[in-house]
Image (spheres, rainbow, N blue to C red):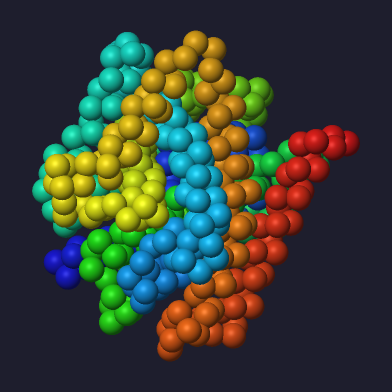
Length: 407
């Protein structure tokens, strides 16, 4: 057990933090809108997709000992290096806003005023940097992530129908009346499963942890376990939302407070409280990992100090990016009439759209024999990688048609 505990690291954290506050809201809204019929099997299938992307990211950094943004800059020119970092920073900022939406909602639920809850959440996440050393910070993040188990507890408290779950896997269809909305939610689900920040976080995290080509097998175990846990918890969140299926009709405006109030009627006050704790925890862990992915990628592109083993005074610009992105997100949710619910869903969709160019470069670099040597992606792996690219392109085009060419 001690060996397994030490083994867990960037792969597990990247996958687990994928169920962030925005993802929790999105998954719950999906359950409310569609029940368990289509999306529970879908998220479980996405474990293979997530593992493929994260394994390539881990392998690329472990073999080259360089992060994604640096490699893109060196091999494809400054434009692409800056492009990847700029789009990541933009998407990460939107993601961080959704994390603070979730975290503050969890504290507001127990009676803390919104602005005080926002300040407390900011202070909680900022205190992460005061701890010394990568290993200590990684263990703290893992303990925070372990609280995701509350979603499994709440899912069981909803008393889901085993017959309905079994039928979901055998029929796997969407009610006819809801098929017009399924593409939007599908790409949001895929976008949440393979968010852009995960590639940067896992690659840089593997380097900081000291993973090299000799530890690829251990890195794959870490990644595979994280992907498995992530999809199981995501399915549990959809089951929680499905308990409100047919009870909430305006899903587009569904927010954390609406979810908690709805769950009070289906699982009681304790279940709703546990869900709120899980929502806060999801936002807490993701705020750390998403901010770190921005800090690592930007610092690496410009050649700044960027290790979590460094103290603040040793890597001031690295930690300034971490803290600055959090402060901006915390201030953003205090803006009056900001469409927080809309941002939560759209962030997942943007993540799916931005993943396409990232995935193209990831497949190209991991398939390059000069760069990867004996660790390059094999033929069937390359075929599978390009198939994922084609899938994301198709989903992106479908979303654009759905959005701008309404039927």
